[in-house]
Amino acid sequence: MRPILLCSALLLSLAAASPALAQSAEDAGERRIMSSAAFLSGHPDLRYRLSGLEHFRKGDFDEAMLRFRRAARYSDKPSQGMIGEMYWKGTGVAQDKALGYVWMDLAAERAYPLMLAKRERYWNELDAEGRARALEIGPRLYAEFGDDVAKKRLERELRFAKRNTTGSRVGSVGALTIVIPTPGGTEVVDGTAFYDEKFWNIDQYVQWQDTDWKLHGEGTVDVGEIMDADTPLPEDTQGD
Image (cartoon, rainbow, N blue to C red; front, side, top):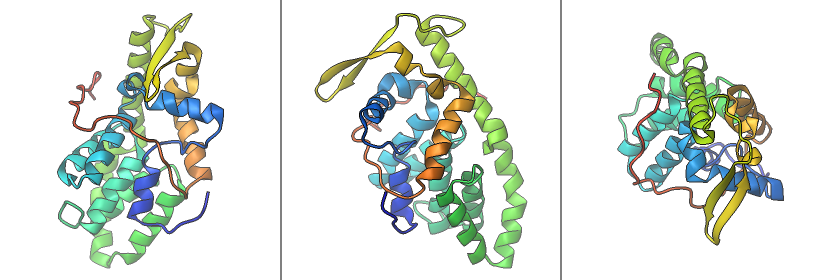
C-alpha cells in the first residue's frame, strides 16, 4: 500500500472496512461476507460505522456522530477515531480539542499506528489547559467506551447473533449455507466460511482486525456499496 499523509480523508477511507482487505480470491470472498446484511446484522460495530460513514460523506454530521458513537460503544476503534477527528476539527460539532484528544486516545487503545500518530500530534498541540481538561474527562469516556467494557458488549452481540442464526445453543453450523445478494445476483457461501471463528469469537475477531490495522496503517480501501444508510437500524439486541 502506498504511504499517504495522515489526514481526515485517510482516516475516512481506512474506516470504510476492517480489515483493509486485499484483492486475492480469498479476501474477495471475505469482503462479500462482510458486506452482507446477514453479517452486518450481527456486527453492530461495522454496521453503525458504515452507516456513519455514509452520513458523513453526505454532510449529515449529526447523524454521522450518532452512528459513530453507537459503533464506538461496541469497541470500534475507527469510529472512535472519526469522533476524535470531528471534535478536533469542529466538523459538525462545536470544536473541542481536549475532547477530540480523548476520543483519539481511545482509538489508539490497541496501538494502531495511524491512531497513535494522530493522538501524539493532538497532545503536542494542546495547551496546558487543554491537557488538564483531557486528563479530567478521559476516565469518564473510558468507563463507557474503553475496551474493558465495550468489547463485552460486542461479545454478547456476536454470541447472540450466531446462536440465533444457526439455531443452536452451542452455535453449531452443521450443513448451513448462506445466500448473499451481490450485484450479479446471489451467491451461496458455505456456513463454515461465514461462521469462521475469526468473525464470531471475540478474541479472534479483534485479533483479525488488529493485525491488519497494525500492518497496514496507511492506504486506501474500496468496499463498494455496503448498505443504505437511511435504512432504519435495528435496536441493539442485548443492550448494555
